[in-house]
Image (cartoon, rainbow over all chains, first blue to last red):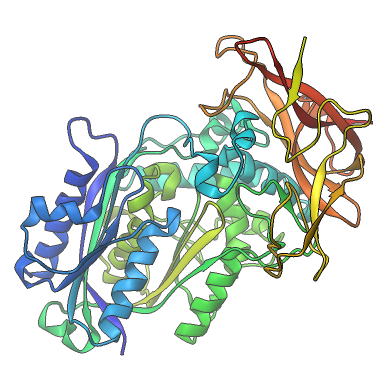
Length: 380
Length: 139
């Protein structure tokens, strides 16, 4: 038995002064319930989380205190994916038929400032200025570009696509296209990544209503099925965030592990994917994740991007909603934003950014500290 | 002027020939820096402390061009922030370690270049004690 997504809701990403992260989650939840045509009182369980905006079960104060099991999830960038996986397992186990998955967040301006002790590291790591995730992506990318002989124009093309797609998305934060030259010459932040190649911590909320596949037709004529949802952590020897040392073994990273597991679970391969949302906290992440998720060989990205293959009208559209670059990253909501977008695309309801052909299968992927990844494969 | 190591788990300071300390698993041979009390490779608890070689190869690098938020501590201020280089250095046959670099000019940083261990003052405590951290510098 699979699980069906029958309702989706979002509170726009970006900055919403005067509204807490929790309230943005409540807006998303009410919209998802309305989309599914169910009442909060009918929901039998919920999973949800935020990184900086409080416990998700406090949503009971907004939506109504109904006494259901509401499980708070805290799993870094994989928080949304982990909530969805847990909800699917909850349903597949037979414990319940109808549930809510929700993620929201509200972060301060500027880069994240995690504490070393949260990751089992000594205070020295933060004092020395190394507790900064953007450095990791820059260093991983620097090596990747060197190993696979890729030029930095590929990074510009990814950012350019993100802002162009974001301009078509009414829920995005960055809604103004930015030209190739402006991106290419913007202020360097962590070489080789410059200002417009990074996303920023942000705010927003997303919710999904899920049910047993065989009950989905009661609620919607266009259910989207969760064919796979997998989450993985890092292995010794993989190059991951916040690692003062790595062994020379070159193990597959968390993304590769989660991706492989998801394809196995769905009985599908990368060639079956029609549209994808992959983690693009900076444009180098999207570049590397294209190959780590199996969509191309390492080093093929430069050609794919120059040929426009990942644009909305391309062979494999990636981050049609503008991704993290145009939406910002509210950690608890970010992975579920990807699911929201893929559901919209599979329903054919993505408006100005709808992929102009029949879509059957979509893919989502997040990656984050200290080496976690969650992947879903969704089918119309 | 007194000085101390930013963390004695990393290196002893002052020392005649300061070197970085790592742990090595007696069961599977995995290395870790800084020293761990158990092995992240196999989970074994029989680990020994070993000094790391002082020279290596620059494996990757970047430049930090904005001042990190707390818990960053440094001798400069936001207004006078000086970008710093950092990277991973491969100690051949041992492991790759993340490190500050003494150099932050991209024109002088190249993957594959030889580098060697160096030390610098990360910050000064209110009582005047200089807190020393490790780095690597191009040879």
